[in-house]
Length: 136
Image (tube, rainbow, N blue to C red; front, side):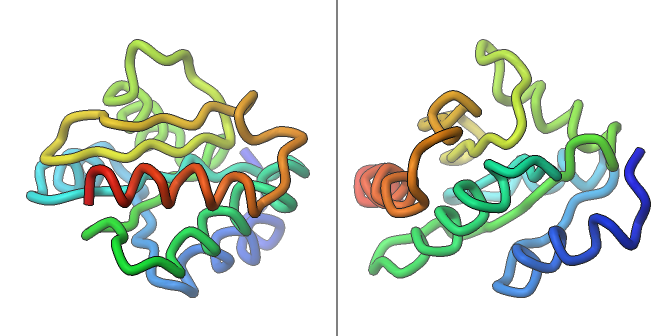
């Protein structure tokens, strides 16, 4: 577990723009049963989360079409919620950071760590925007 003061600004990077933070298994279940589209960001303390994933997720929202629901879990902090969210992302192996787009609870698009690490935030945003334009 990471100290709360360390992850606070990393959490706020997403919650400050409207992402709902999920801390429990029940909160994840509630989020995944909502109608419409839901973007789940598995947040992380790693450098690629700070340089690529979070900025990419934020930039992707500058689009006419976007998910109905924005949620996030924090790997290494909220274990129960993260494990539950990753269960919805099967058959993809657990990775962080990662992003998944769901439509009515069904996984329709996935970005794993290897799609994020080493790629600029703009490329990640474009990938997500393409998914939003198709599914949202």
